[in-house]
Amino acid sequence: MTADQVLNLITALLAGALVAGLGVFLWARGQIKDLQARIDKLNHARQLAAEQVTQARRQIEQIQRENNVLKLAAKHHPPAAPAEPAAAPAPVDAAEAARLYVESKLRPAEPEPTPDPFADTLVLRHGKV
Image (cartoon, rainbow, N blue to C red):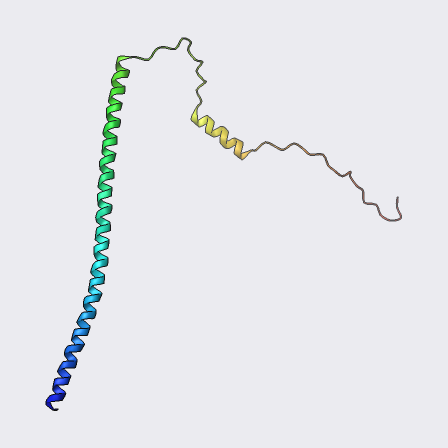
């Protein structure tokens, strides 16, 4: 090999390495950009979730305060007795209600007999009347 050929070979190798390096750089830059976008999206979702948790805790605290106020108000003001006691419905035994329900499903009411739309017919043999 001559010096020119060696120089051309080294130049071609360096140019190839430069092009390959540029390709890897561009590919990696795209991957890094995609990963950065995913990280930003996750951080935004985490921040939104934290805000929602804070808002939910504030709502819970407000409801608890209102509940305590209503408890105190109910403690100091007993409910007024009704003028006429309402007739209490007869207590229904849960087991009895369940048994009646199952029986109604197992033995449905028999349908009403429907009238026969055709009169009874007799089969007659020919020649004998």
